[in-house]
Image (tube, rainbow, N blue to C red; front, side):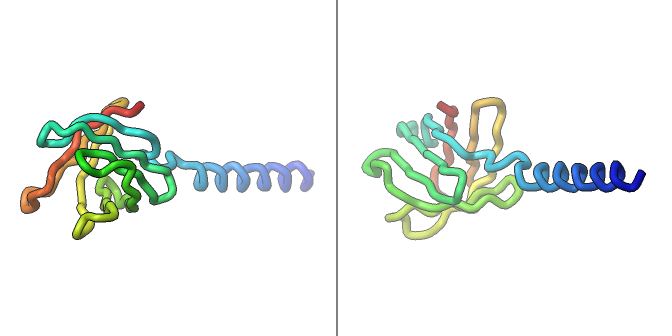
Length: 113
């Protein structure tokens, strides 16, 4: 009788570990296209590992990094003076990157490809 209980416990631990590792993953992973607040065509490709490529105006596939904390994402693109923090919301295949009220950079309204 002990053997079935042990097998059950091992299976439960395995399922719990998989759920913890898999989770929802990186909500931003993928290619997002749309416009910034200035109506400039923009594309951001999030690789799911903290790296990205940014295309807009003069930037063409410029590399960068991002870090997600809750519903905030900090984005640093090579060539930008500083990192920019956004609040992000995802509704279906729509991503909105909202700028904090005390900042003066552009936000984005993007659609997942």
